[in-house]
Image: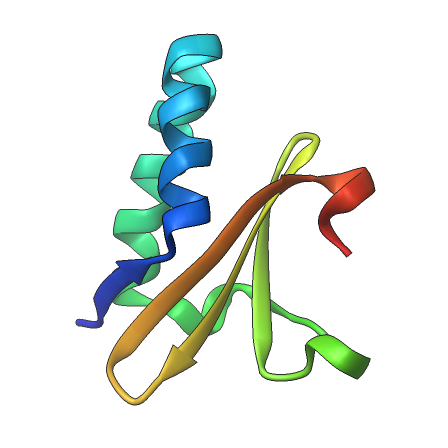
Length: 83
């Protein structure tokens, strides 16, 4: 099992999302728990985002990296501005 750490940007985004869309917030939390078990199941990114992976939730994207036994979550962005 991997440990999960997140950036301040991701933490702020999740706080806003919890107020605006609690259903989506719960979906993301559940998927993050699964991610701690199997981070390789997420889609790898290419080019300048090489070594990053993503999980998509409707119009939103969670970007993260896997380093040793730590999953570092970078951001939660709308798909239009995520890349």
